[in-house]
Length: 98
Image: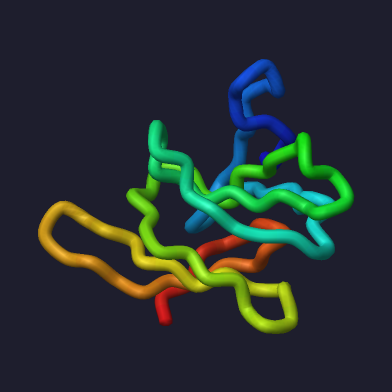
């Protein structure tokens, strides 16, 4: 389930990626980033800068890039022995391999 958060007194975000039940977040326009401490993908909406929404869970995420239309995020998912290019909706949902 996706929820606002992200630390620093703002609450801890939760979310899923790659399967499971997912509730979408209210993201409309903003940016994607990876937190150093948990290596997960987050989005923040320019209308709600204090709220961060975790988009992935349990992945080792690097180099996110938001699509021009702001609807998808492509990123590198680093595994134990290899890496893959994945994509997910900016509102959350299942992660797909490119």
